[in-house]
Image (cartoon, rainbow, N blue to C red):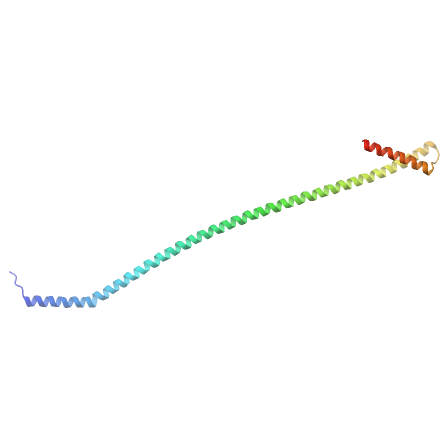
Length: 165
């Protein structure tokens, strides 16, 4: 059978307890503190990483929002420029039409004035030729009052013919 030596067992238990206290004080405490420090460092790193991820997500959302605003602003600017260009084009076209209409009216007026001038000159020449023809037919020179009367009658007939035509 097995004999138990009580003094040896008590000594071994005492030695074990002393060794446990020493291990606890010398190794387990610093090891526990080191593990807690490491756990806290890892936890801090995880929190910083999570905070960085949230910040990146916020910055990314802000970036996309700003890009959308910039695109919308650019689209509005392009549309406004196109609208202003169309307005300027229409204004230039209208001004050109108005100017051409003015030039056309002026040319018509000038043509009418020139026509009247040519008709006056033509009447004068026809009247002079008529008087010369009458004098040649009659064979003598007409006096001033008779010339004026014949000329007025002739011009009235031409005006009446123009109005009728």
